[in-house]
Image (cartoon, rainbow, N blue to C red; front, side):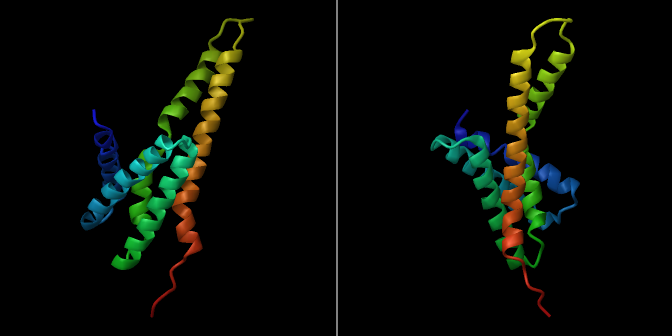
Length: 152
């Protein structure tokens, strides 16, 4: 499957969350577009030699900046666009691998060596945590650095 086509799968996930969060229907296309742009940005950073955490940070910043810009143009909060676009980048695979490793340790027979499972679970758990932190910081930074002033 073509790489760009894989990135487009972020849109249905973002749209599902946007509808779950009761985002206005006229803004759904922005949520889907931002999700695709975020995934493509993360993929580009990784292709250029960055890791998934740096890629997620860059993608989160892109989503946050565009969401704030678009929100100010439409007189809507940027979070409407940013949150649903960022959710598909939550590291479910890494979280699953961490829990799977921990459950593997719990089911080892007494006296068996679980070092490899523990290391694997730890690496996956730390990676997942770093991705979530990078995503949260990336999406929130534009909202915090350039707050909107109230217009009367």
